[in-house]
Amino acid sequence: MSLNHLVADVLRVPVESVGDDTGTATTAAWTSMRHVEIVVGVEKTYGVKLTPREARVCRSVRALREVLTGKGIAV
Image: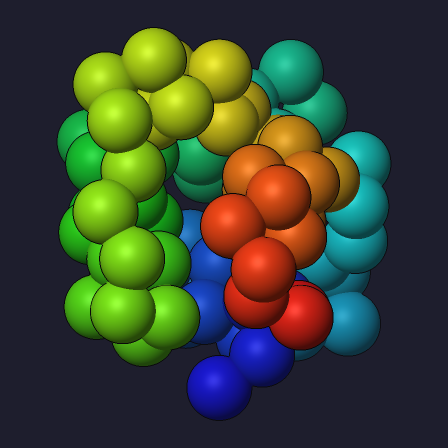
């Protein structure tokens, strides 16, 4: 599953509406509860563990992609 698809599924929005700028500042559906669901989904889907700091700063698709790339995961 792509990162955009994962985020779209959690936010319950069309995948076409999800891009790198999708995040807490731009998307009303990205609530604190949905954020936790996204972090858990990323950890399960990509087999990684985000640190508490990473989970806090990953407030957009771009930030999630950067953290995953830094962990050697191509997304």
